[in-house]
Length: 328
Image 1 (cartoon, rainbow, N blue to C red):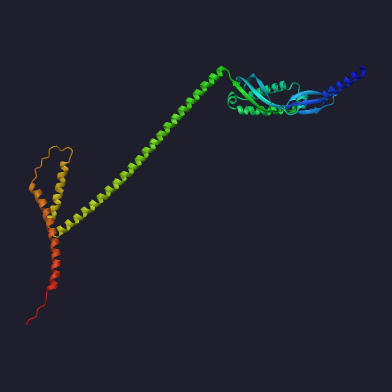
Image 2 (cartoon, helix red, strand yellow; image 1 turned 30 degrees about the horizontal axis):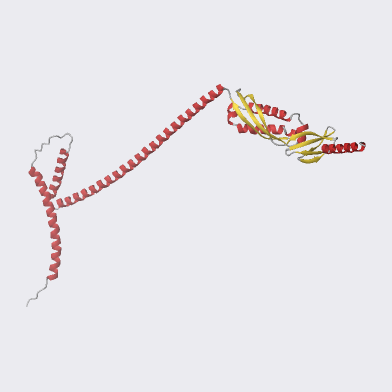
């Protein structure tokens, strides 16, 4: 009585077991490898898939999302024999689940050791100053080397960054003293440059002042020469007039020159620096007579000018009013 029922239950249980064994669900961000009798056959992508039950099996569940790996801290000897401590961080992503599973054993351990050895190689070929000032160059070189080495593993290295570079304490103190000395040197150089520029500007100002002063002196000399030239012309004209008066027999013209020289001599004697008391055993009548001669000369010149004008006007009137008379 219970035979057919038991058989049906067994068939149902086997059917359910086959369904569970053949239907697989792959979550997002993962890939499954399928092995048939221990050999890789294909890769399952996210979603609902079916495999051959009891013949195929899931080999590895590979995380396809980008992962971060903390590079442990390690000691590195630089090119100039300086010991530094450094660590870093790396980002990578699996692109081929089969290669990441079957081309390398323990992918994360292999990737970490490869990153550490390449960090020692790249940073060990540089000086300490280059390590501290060329981090971008170090990161670029590390990324290129590690990414090319891990390509056969089916992964893509997206970034490698050096986090900390810690020199020994004595080197840090020495670098601090060096930086201080360099800054003091730059300050002295800048101060010297500023002083030199200030002296140059001051010299330029003095030069311009001297040029302007020379131009002013030249203009003053030119005007003084012009004034002396005009005075000489006036003196020459006066001398000519006096000479003409003397030639005409006017003795008062000689008195003009005598009085002029007499007064100039008195002026020079009175303006001398070493003269305190001036004794003048001179006759005042001579000076007054000379000055009177000058006045007489001026009056004579004025009268001559007036008579010449009257004669010219009188001649014209006489010629115009004279009428010839006839005898009766």
